[in-house]
Length: 216
Image (tube, rainbow, N blue to C red; front, side, top):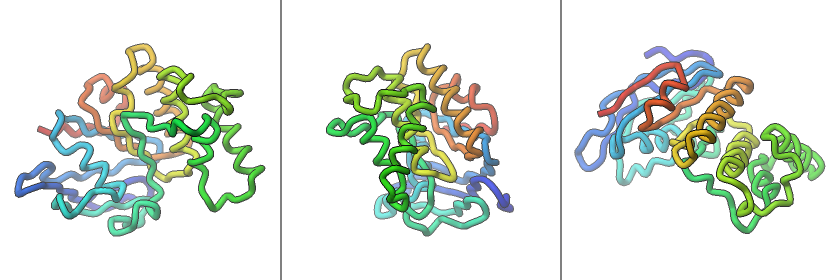
């Protein structure tokens, strides 16, 4: 397919393992601020797809091909840290030995070396997540929804150009799930990030809007 000049483009992406095909061919063009969803059961290749897009797929185990382009640049052969693609997981993966602010500081790019600027970015992220004043807190004292918001802001502080979602809503109860899902999509729209979400949940897919691909 022809790649768009802006956004995230997957061109003829295919993934297999041990001679078995997980994804035969996937073509997607996700404009900035839009969400595309790949839905399927466990074992259908959803997480492997995200790993391929982010650059983490173990090619010693998987057979994979096809192009990944971001804002017109082919990033297929770039290392993960060169792609500037953020990945939000099902688990929040907060560091238990760091405070909330310390976890967020971990997301700030190393190129921003001035401590005052790093602190300013962390405080702004806390305010954006409705967690002002929570910086010194131990992550273990936070609710599930609060931990999810910290994890999201840590990813966004890394200044990604695209966002991948690996079922980040599945561990939250119904009320928190809807509110956090809305927050994630609003943040992506505000920042102009193309979003690729994988899920097995129809409600998540319906809430995302945009393109939907269903895997067997």
